[in-house]
Image (cartoon, rainbow over all chains, first blue to last red; front, side, top):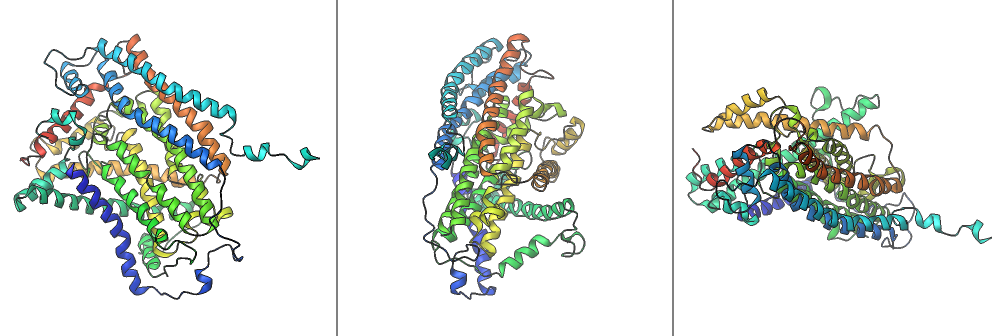
Length: 170
Length: 421
């Protein structure tokens, strides 16, 4: 863990340094001639109107909500996928004894006694159980996704499509 | 960290010093005599190496993009800088940008505006920490390496939002919001696509996943089952979009948003957004190479075995080093070809509209990747119920996964004590 933190700290510092050092060197050679025109923000030559901290569309909020729900879900897929993948490798009847022992030890955190390897049959049923687990877990999300889709929240131009047009009003 | 098995149980201690690190560390242990300092120095060496891998390919791809785009548009591209082919164009551009005035608009946030490129560069550099360039050539080999790499890479979006929000410009704000919506949306199918090869490999350790794809071409995970084959292409589309490359480069859509979140940036700060983008392209293509295309393996067992034969049993350094250099060459060629495909796509397809981009993701890629995920999960179970095997062709995947695992366990047990020959 110390190693990882060492690395992470050093990579962060290196990333900062990669930008900071050239910028510091550049300070010696680059001009610095500010003018009101240069300090203004760019809006294609037009004078700007109002602050740029405007409200933006609520659609982005829906996207962010979808992302959070899906991403939390997928984060739980990763450990499951490891166990399931291991079980499926063990479920192969042609697997040699030595490989079976190694993979059993990877699946179980403590090494089993020799001769207590997970059999292909047991691994198959572990896989079936895992599949039912993930179907329930994933199914809940997919039902929600289908509901959001049906409601039309995935349509980017929904607001425009449903807005009353001048033709409707007249 | 005394034995491999204890390590396997505890996520915190599953740090596996790679071969490169183990040799650097044991060398430094002898010279310095303090394990802590040796480990720190080894980390410094890694940072220097990986920063090279970060900068040099990015420079090459910037040049390649200019040449390829020029050829596609019937132009010549850079021809003069550095003699023939203009191969020094990227460093020359860097030098030019260094001399440009460092502008920040008055309306911009004076702290967040200069900070944004740092976040982008750090997150995209730190992702390389977990990428194995060759068997064991990896700065930090973790049993959750793939997961962490994706997590660190997705931090880039924070820098993008910050850049757009702090610019004080409406173009930049709109560009950043679009970019954020796009990047987070495409992360969903991308993450699901990444889980699919993990279901086959049973591991999140990128080095292990690479190692178990040795042997014939058919052993690459892309050919493992029909679902991984389809997944590769879905992953590649998502990866292109998450690097904000055309046809998904909505954030920098010149025709409607000037330059998106980059509008107010100039000079060197601006160039680092691009360097990070090209480095991210290499990183996502590197993940694709490792997960689907056999990593550092050529796909021809004879060739791979003779390279691995260089390594030998005694792991004498010049030969094992040479084996790794050759492995790195194979990995680099594969990843670079994928990057070239991204460049090719950029200059061939027109840009999508924002609603088309979001619809492609939410209404096509997400359902497709969910279907592929379920298919890839059910496939081995159906095979095992009907035929008793879990792979359609060839030997069981476990036969290759177990040796890959044992290599890892060996370095775990011996590398830490520094008792390599």
